Length: 304
Image (cartoon, rainbow, N blue to C red; front, side, top):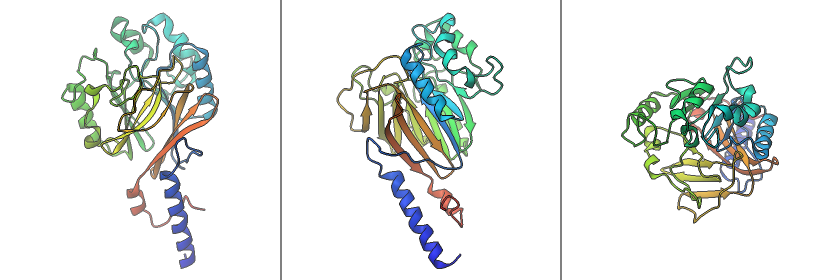
C-alpha cells in the first residue's frame, strides 16, 4: 500500500470517528457498526395496545438479530391468562419454544408488574432463559448482556452488596466481550416526573467493567452519562407516556413525544445506540468506539 493510500485511509478513519462522537441531539443520522449484530430494546410494553403493535411492527421492519426487554412485559398483574395477548401476539417469532420457534431471540428482564402474580411464576413459565431466569447472562456476537432483577421481590437482593450484585461483579470481571451491557427495569438515574432515580440500583457498574446500563420503569426515553458510561431509560414500548421533571446533571437527552424502541448496532469496533419513535423517525443516536480494536489491525477493512 503506498503512502497516499495510507493517508487517505487515515483521513477516512478520522472522519468516521468524528461521525460517531459529534451527532447532534436529536440526531439526524444513525451510524451503523458493520460486521456485527443489531438488536432492539423495548421497555414497559406489554399492554396489548395499538402503540405496542406499532412498536412491534417497527422492530419487525428492522430484521434484528434479537430483542432485549427492560421489564413490565405483562400488564397489569403479570397473570398467565394475559401474557400471550401482551407478549406472544407481537413477538412470538423471537421467543422459543413458541409455536415451533427453535432458537430464542428474546431476552426479557423482570419488571414490578411481572412480579404481581405468584412471585412472577407466569413469567418464569412463559420464557426459557439462562440461569435462574430472574438474572442471567447471554452472549450475542461481540455483546454480552447481563440481565438483573431490580425489583424488591428479588430473593437474592438488590443492594450493591447483595448475592445478585456479587454475581454481576464476578460475571463482568470474567467477561471477555467487547461490549458488556447491563439491563434491568428500575433506572439508576432518571429525570421523569413519575418515578425518577432508583438510588438503590446505583451500583458501581463502570468500576465492575460494564459498557452501558439500560433500564425502563419510567415511560420516557432518556440518555445520561454517569461514572464515564452511558445510561439509558427506555420505557416507551406501548403502555403509556410519562412527563419529564427537572433534568438530572447526568442527563444528556430526553424525549416523551411518542412511543418507540431502541435499535442498537454492535461490532468489535463500535456500538451505536439509537431511539426511533413508532413512525420510524430517528430521535437520538450515540456511539462508543473500541480503540483497542485498532491496535490489533494493520489495515482498515471497513473503509472502501
